[in-house]
Length: 129
Image 1: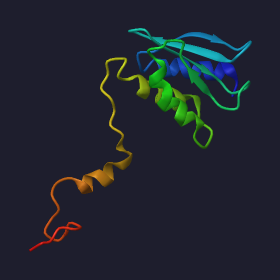
Image 2 (image 1 turned 90 degrees about the horizontal axis):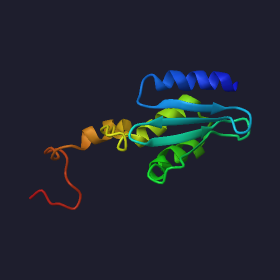
Image 3 (image 1 turned 45 degrees about the vertical axis):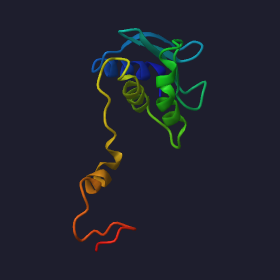
Image 4 (image 1 turned 120 degrees about the vertical axis):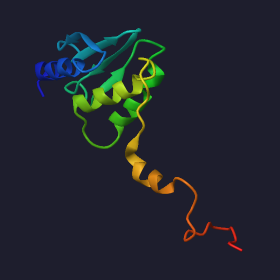
């Protein structure tokens, strides 16, 4: 994707959350820098010079929160810029003072497991005498 299209997508993404796109340059790295109060910053290197997106922060406070996004990017399959930005936003929610989102990936499983087992569900290793 052309860099200017990536920048437009990033600007649109910023309109729905606390981050601002504060810098975008294509010459050396195809890099976009983002910032949100209270001092949360990161940058994205876009494919072109690299095969995949890359996220990083120059802030020591922000780096640990990016691990989730970095793992996501390095997992199988190509990612879009918006997928990467959403994962970064999810990772930074605690730093932004926002509640963490519950991962509903296993929601259907946990819903079945809540509460005590019914009379027709014998617990393993426990006698029903």
